[in-house]
Every structure is written in structure tokens, then in C-alpha cells.
Length: 110
Image (cartoon, rainbow, N blue to C red; front, side):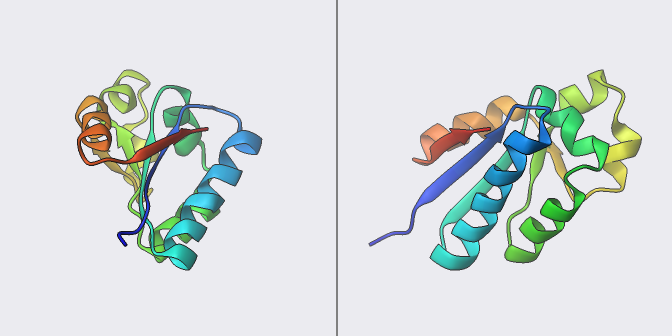
């Protein structure tokens, strides 16, 4: 049986809402071997740049999950410098979300 494929779409700017989702993403990868993706979009782009998630981000990367963020919003919000010091890949969010659907991921939003 194939492992679960779960995408975490981070939309909120509230660390109390987002941190449990990132913890779940890391644990699904570490403990269950799930294929996990994390995408920051909307206000989640601002939260990822703020530094409030840096410890959670480190745990994700160490577990083998590569967080991604919407490149257009990083540009629009003027956050390039903040992202340059974080392990978050920038990409076209629309194409990433399309791949979630095409590849059969279950999408959870936080």
C-alpha cells in the first residue's frame, strides 16, 4: 500500500493556528513516511518571513520536508530579504496547487 500524500496549505498569519499544522506535517513524514508538502500562501507568506516559525521550519527540513512559498507574494509584500535567510523555496503557487490535485494529495489548510 502506498503511503499518504498530504499537502499543508498555510494561509494564516496566526502562529497558534499554523504551528500545530507544521508539527503534524513533520510527524507524518518522520513517523508515517508520508509524502508531505508545505506551501505558504496569502498571509502565511508574511508569517513565514516573520521568524515566528523558524524552529518549526528547521524541524521540517531536518525531517526531509522542503517548505515552499509563493514567489509572487514574497515579491508583492517586499519580503525577499527575509526569505533569503530561510530554507524556503520560492515558486509559482498556482502550479504547486495544481500539482497537489494532479498527484492525488489531500490538502489541509491552516
